[in-house]
Length: 186
Length: 173
Image (cartoon, rainbow over all chains, first blue to last red; front, side, top):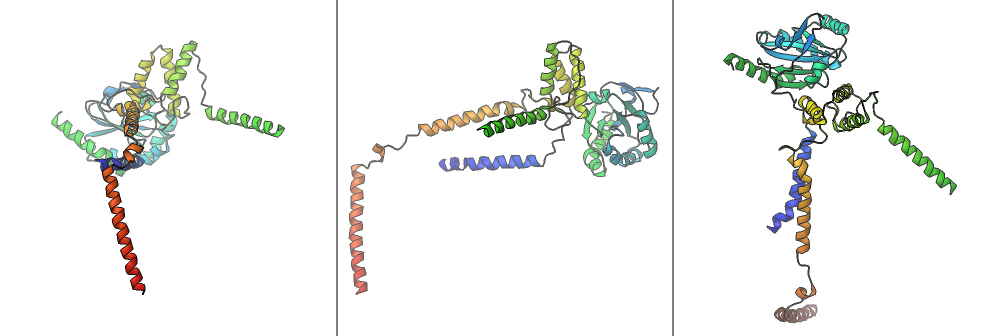
């Protein structure tokens, strides 16, 4: 008994070391969204390409939705763009998954030019100049991507750029799961 | 002497300048309804964390999201929302992360009660150590039995030693 007590401080120090060492490799930016598991917030905003077309939640709900937050002021969005095009044009995903954009705190003309210049991967982009929908979604930067299921429930929020590796690791399993959920009629 | 005084004055002034610069935070011109709202705004913007920045509150950060949230905070205050409603508003969007003073819940028990528990453990350890009887002269002194045994050992050692020295002498011869 006495011997064990003598080694207790050493054991504690080692345990502390392990905990702190693990902390070094954690990504502090990676935090769960408060909205995962909640329904998509309501909104009523114009689309980017047509200022007279007002869209709201019902325009999104029904399919498995990827909602990508982007802006022309965001350099990482440019990096992400070709991968978004790839996803939008993937024949395996096309029947199930719809990609929408949320143009976040941007200028309309610049954003329209971006889409004509780099090609438009989105079914439509919501034009959120004031960042109101962004605020309700807990967006704190761009790019961010939300996965919304066919019931309109937010299932995932990913902050950062999507590329092939991120897509495989973070999104593909969830999308497969959602497709099977939808087919089962859950 | 004069030099020393001058030195201290210069040091104090520069110190003030440095800390003043460090405390400088982004300033927007908000017009508050009354003094209380202003104080509440200042308190809340110090207690809410900027979601984008790792360790800055809303008052400190000049990132765009912090600016937006300060504006939102101001709007909510002007609408006459209670502090708890405002905090709930932020938490429901950005998660518990935005609270610099986390709520007491099952995941924050360790955070809230851990330090008190550690102090308690420390106090117990100190008490246990103090209550152990220190070595006094009385319990250090040998009993008569022990003394006899000691005497015997010393005697036998003496005999052995003398025998040894005798054999050594013989070897030399």
